[in-house]
Image (cartoon, rainbow, N blue to C red; front, side):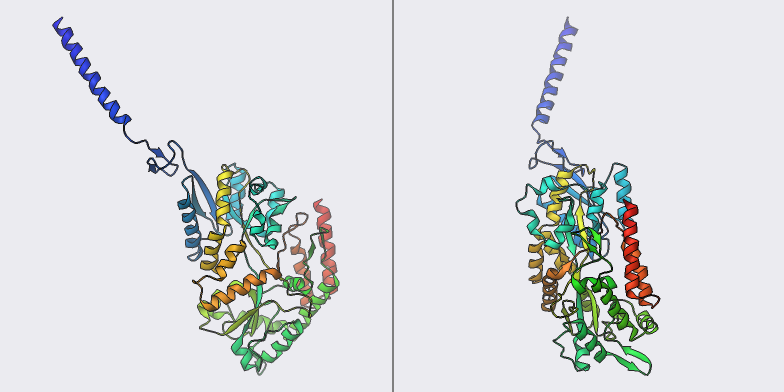
Length: 451
């Protein structure tokens, strides 16, 4: 009996001790573990985990990587439900790896992709239809430049959001203009003036050119001049058919051929072979007086031009009144088809293409962005020099002259059939008309075979 009482008392002591421990545990603050492995206190909803998004880009340079990662950091700090992680993949790998990941059922949550092939990916179910999210946002598409919004569409629905773009413009060296007896504040307005100014800038030493006024295909391609000539590309998007051999295109190719024949291909090849980028760029080195390139070329002038005096203007018109049409490319942000958390990805997409992130990207990278408010704010940023603001403002203004040329679904690689024929014409192996007629027939045959 005595042993039983002692055992009973010992049991009561153990029960009381256990009760104290349990009570103490119940009184501690609750914690939750996020998918990043961090513990959080009462500020967040108990038991709720953050959604982690994998964001793929090809921006890994010393310049661009810190910029995009600061945007990601700002988004992560702006809310406590989503955490974005950045995955850098090289230019040559990112999209092939994205396709492989999608086929394996594990695509990235958000990816940066080419602006001219959105519809192709939509047609192949490689990106997500964003219409259900966009329809909840009043006036959403009006936040972006119209020429950048239209390539987002496939069968009337948007499958991406535009991120950045560029616009090809005319740069001229004011010091070279002065030396040639030209008004340094007046760039050429038409192709005829462009050629006239170039002849005055040309400088020879015996049979060797020390300086060339302008070369149409140095910094730009023949297709840019076709577009500039009449505002139309090789593809009629309304009629959905190729229009390669139009009379204006033939005349443009003849103009390029005649212009280059003044120097001869041997002179052009040897002259351009001497140069490279940065300080070795012939425009920066004062060896070419005028140059067509995207507005972002200003950063090379800024960094390597040693204070050179330059001007920037829209591309000259083929003739007065024909228009200053130019071309731009760019990139978009997409949610790959099959992404696990499309709602969270959409929230990041909105931030990435919103005015705050877009202004930051534009100012730090001197890049044209798709969001109108962001672009206009960047043009007025106090972080840019007076020269930088004026240059950036000129590029923003030139977006009204800029068109994109999305790859048609019927023949996505059709330009590969045009370029070889054009090259033969410029080398004198066939006439410009024959070249474009052959290209037209080849593309029509490609479309028929693709059906």
